Image (cartoon, rainbow over all chains, first blue to last red; front, side):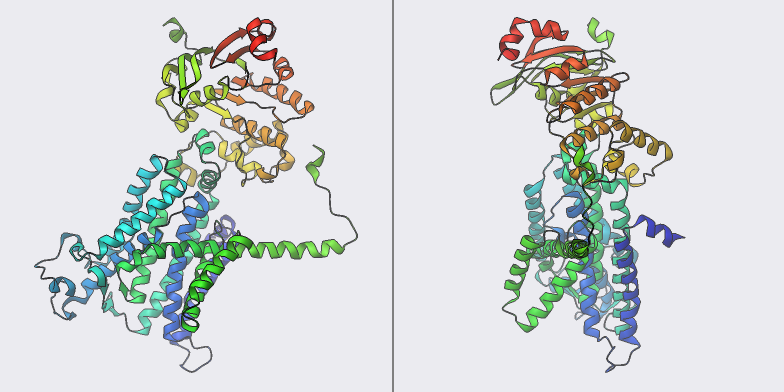
Length: 383
Length: 250
């Protein structure tokens, strides 16, 4: 019943990608844990970690697509929401270390002992509780997005100015988190995590579960986004993107529509960051770097913005390319990335997804050309 | 304040606005009654579009007052609020949502709640489908309802935008140059359509096309340099020497 409803309400492609992700969520951990080492189908541990990382990137790109592709808000600071979600998770993981740290302080994380702090800062309270940390994973990015969006959208800041503000936001956070006094580990960030909910982060079982959760979370957010963009609200979002002032004259509060999309997108980005951190084992201020946020824009553009599944594909392709190139030809990666961006901008304005559509269009035209009967005339030509 | 007590639909009094020293609207006063259709003519730069901008909240007047239904001060509301009060607008250049289908353009315009969450959980009902089907029939776009608005011809876009106004079902329609770029046959049809709409809506039409104005057969206001030059029947306005000098005669 539910799956039939979803199939009707969702874009067909989004439905199948979500199904594929769910299969992926089961298959990869199985091939990692059950299939013995040395078997050709065995998925090694490092690959599970790598793919898990890509899944989080894909979720971040999906979040950006919701605001950029559908609402026309080009955020150059989405990495900030990702990093904040990551820090919230990292704080929980730090508290989980307990007295197993180098200084064996049962409450204070190592870096605080090192800085001679006497007691835990107030904003670290509650992070020993998993549920509290998980709430903060979405609430902190949401609050930041709400405040920033409320101020910017209400004053009708759009286009390049808005992009610059988001970029400045992530840069400001980068500088702030670098400071030791901020209480988030400064330069080194948070690391040396031991376990999550009592399960060791080093065991391949835990890592397989984290992978599966990432795939399921991506599938879930894809379904959610697809439902939203297919609803009437999604149509309003596209209307805002294409003709903002016209939408106002229809009586829609453009700033509320944008705020909804921006806050939801920030929450998805935060969740992606929270899944990312236990898999890579570290979160540091580098995640706030403006270049990271620009990477997300590239993934989305390469995959095809405004398609939801395009950015997922783009995130995998570009990050996969990066992993390959930086290992095989470390000096060439930036050239490859630059070239890719030029090619996409010039020849694939709708990204990989658009390219598929173009190829399909070509293929369907071919046989028609050879057929005897002429092309049907355009019906509206007479009017 | 007898005028205010009588509660005309729209009441502009001593409105002025200037852009960089240029007085686009200069002490403009005008009254539109309930159920009235009014045609506005005037040379380029007479302030016709600026007047619409003021009524719909896009531009704030420097001085003067604009009242809707007697006691709502439009200068204190923004575009979305004014649209929800019941003032709809068709733009000079047809402005439809190009990446939406004709159908979706109408769905978006359909009268109803405009909140984010009511849009998110919106379910189309039979009543809505029927009114959309009716509008599609009126604007003659039934056969193109699933086409993207971008693929419509210029005249069809003009009609779609009028259809969007109908879907909004406002109390007052502001229609800016509805027949610009239309063929003669389309122009006649549009005049017919507007007359039909005016039966249960108040309408302000801005237009240059004099034969179209003649077809409408309503009270005419001629604007020039941001103020009312002449007002009355088309015959009266067209015979006014001031109008002939500044507009028709040229």
